[in-house]
Image 1 (spheres, rainbow, N blue to C red):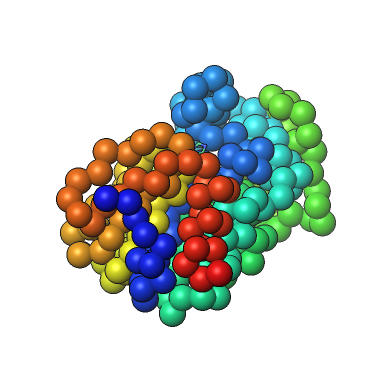
Image 2: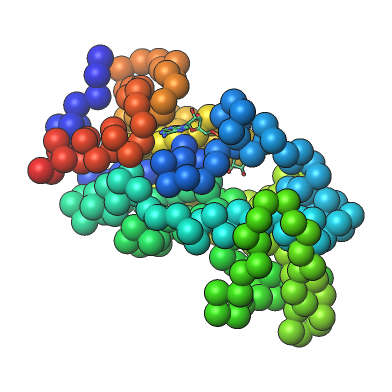
Length: 249
Ligand code: APR
């Protein structure tokens, strides 16, 4: 059975849970798409762990600065904008993302919950104090260039990207808010994620267990079960705006 726009209109408490696929159409590479995904081209163990940063801080910082440069040069796409529009049309919308870009915020989404941190919130690797980028201090234009990380103004420690690396736990308060929203919602839209990485991938299951409807929006078909889970095939920047338009005009 196909998910109807009417069901979106009838929902009171909605969670939008997004992954890299929602930013793909803004030109931001996903992780696992064949050939183009970041983990298809780079070794996550060499770039996305605390040990990798200890081994070669300049390589890791340079790679994240390259990713941050891509995000700064990108624009929110129609999927990000559709979520911002949805936020103005429904009683309660909680936006949860696994992405570390700020495209949802730049599209106008309030209070985005970043389960895996954000490129825009670096902090000291030693004392964990937040670090403020100076202006648009950005020297990561070309891929793969090593860049010495800046130093913490308080303890002179090396500054690390504000993302959650493999082997690190999610920010407690953010995860708790996301789980509460998934338990409380009557509809969860899962957009552009393989649903592989735990614990983030638990959220759609938690919503289903709490009687919500769950809709997977993805270019790949999703195996769905029961009468409350749906798969909407297509590009997020096409499916989401169409769904919001059909529901709210
Ligand atoms: N529209 C909708 N879905 C898309 C699009 C698109 N235009 N392009 C790709 N997709 C889908 C892919 O089919 C895939 O299911 O988006 C998903 C991207 O999956 P991943 O690359 O694995 O990204 P994600 O699920 O967000 O990864 C989760 O893994 O490496 C960690 O921390 C990283 O947050 C990331 C986490």
